Image (cartoon, rainbow, N blue to C red; front, side, top):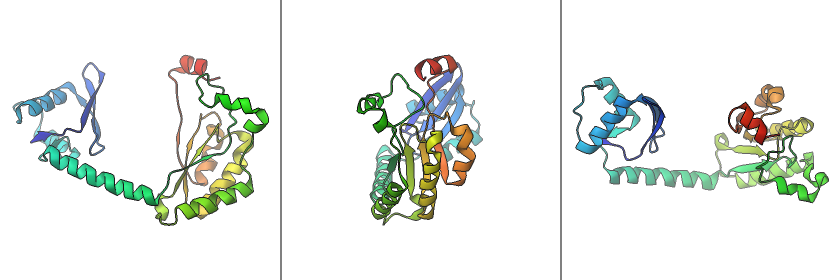
Length: 223
């Protein structure tokens, strides 16, 4: 029995850890005894401790933390997974649509801040219905070999969910849903509470929202 080489151990508190198996994707919260036992197995190749029950050991085998595989076998399995993922990505592209470069925040670290040099009128441009039609003509061609269930578009900006742009966003999503696309968005979340339920109906599967720490820190960096 070997401890997988793909394990990352992250300390959370004095006696709490997060185990991450980068080979299988398993993530578990464990105590210090588990971490010490895994270290023992890694060093000695066997389990001597009585602090861990057989049920937990069996669970760790199921989750891939403990394995009979050699390093070479793990690498071979990872290479096979990588090649399958690569082949999938050749068929299904990752599309990111910038709805607008305008934003309702002015974060001091924003890498798009220099876009203001082009002028506010340029910054406030937004997708038109004609451009939405052209967009889906293009992505449908690029995804002609992609299974419908894997078609995904990420809405980006600027801030994609500005109130003044929400109708064109819903139009874009409705057009995409008819062609089998689901949607993800990168948003600052300011307007999300007002539109989340209706955007979900239009095909929004998830969002990424950045938080810069506790309220005081966050509000100093994002204004």
